[in-house]
Amino acid sequence: MKAITLVDLQTSVRDTSAFNRLQNYYQLCKAFLGLMQKMQPTCIISPTHNNYMFYQYDKNYGYRITRPLNTNLFIDSENEFDTAFQRFMSFLANLKRHQGAILDQESARRYIETAEINRVVYTVQQSIGSIGDSFENPNQSRKRVGQLFEVLVKLIIQEVGLECEPRTISIPIPGYTGYEMSYELDLVFSRNKAIVTAETRFIHETEIVGSVKTTSKDRIDKVFLDKYLLTKLLGREVPVIAVFLHDVQRAKAGNSIFGINSTFKSNHFLGYTVALNRLDGVYYVDPRPEMLANDRLREQIKDFQTFLVQDLWRLSVR
Image: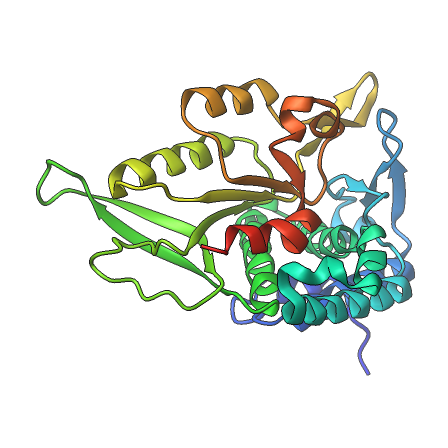
């Protein structure tokens, strides 16, 4: 049997016909972690944030460097990931059965306390991102890596029994006959199949709009604006949430190029909340420390596990 190479994994990431099941993500991530254990790439610890590290590939891949990986979340062992993913899938099956009452189950509460949901989702997506970082031209994969995160979140929501799909809508502009605004919505989800009619105007009252991005950098303003405009143009409150993977990037620190910078703009976030509207939920797989330390941010921003276990069910009871 031919050994899997990084080129094989690059081909998998490019394959637009793949990744229609969570099992596809599992297989790619497991293959990547196994390959890293065999290749033994250089592991570089960030001098500014010791819980972040980078892989540096060998000469065959131009000594390219991956994105920063949070070692508190990233599972680097193939065997450990394999076991964690199976537990994750079992939990999703239980969540589908019990929905918002999942916290009544003692075994589920014990699992949730481990925060393993965030670790599994983070490891899967950052493995994809690290494969993308091995491309000769990062632009070859950047958009695809983002698309795969959107699909990953969609598949997780579908796995627990909700309707969830991307949607493109064109909303007529009141007072300007013949003019429309087109919106590409990352996700629209609901607990039951909603029938969109002329009366419900493109998004049913029971549906929630979700924006899913790997980072809020250069994107957070659009999420707030989308909620504002959708609510104005449709003439009713439209619930909008945002799901982000992280908000960190590599940055120069002294003589090192392996520092870590936050890309989250807290003043902008709070400013949009006051000037436009408050979002119905903001969730991070890898939240920044300031999101937990700042009272005003903490009341609005939560981790992805909280979304999946609690807020998803609260939002979809409409």
